[in-house]
Image 1: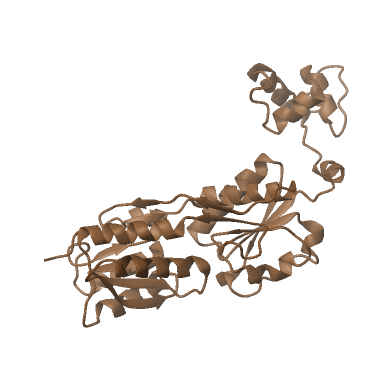
Image 2: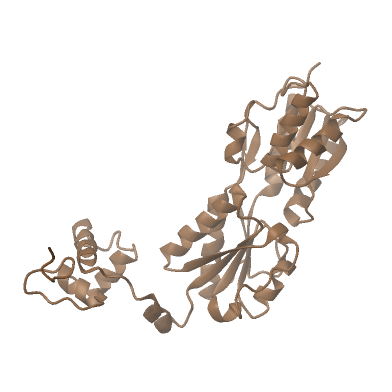
Length: 347
């Protein structure tokens, strides 16, 4: 049975209905500045671990929660960023959001997630006035003009996996060109000379780069060519249909270069349905390194795009812009994960 004291209340002690940082400081025997450092997770190297734990314990005992509304008034900012992605169901964009949310939380900034399907049409303003409720926008894999409604009110815009110098305050990109060069170089060294490009049917910077680099790398090797390009919706069925068409042509390719792992999984299905073995009869590559890349058999050779790092770097770029810093384009490294879906072509 309760004796009427609040949680954490000591006998004879009065606890206010809404504890403040000053109350936490008094309970822990530290300054309010120390409380702020610890509760914002910026205490390392400034506060001893024992004192940091004392602050956290005091906050738990008092049931203290930061007054974010008061902090907003003091700072004069909404302390909220909008993260826009083409699709919530895509694992890559889920990683982007996770990274952005992590970086935002480290700076006590809230995140609103907003999907804009396909990333090509105009994204409507999700609020009565986004500029009145947000500090800025981080948008992944979209055309800059699609964000016009959100950015026309003066909101800083950071673009991810998008065309550099496209009008955004800053751009953060994975090194897409390097990724496709890694794919093409790997297959060319294995001896492949007849390629099919299973291309995403989306007119955006990132997919134009993939197509351009693949064409350049293949054209640089005598006797090598992209014998066919088949466009596909970015899903397994799209990859299946496009790869089936590519494999049915008169000059059957020995390698299927896919713009996305979903397309590559569809390509694996297409090869199997035609009685072809991967990689003995045809090699298949993907892009993104999604979880499914190692769930299929054979496992996919693919390019790992750093989704979480991309989201985190984008959010940090937005916060830097809000501090008045001038940024350009940041490029993040990518990796080729060589697995069982590629091998030298059959003699």
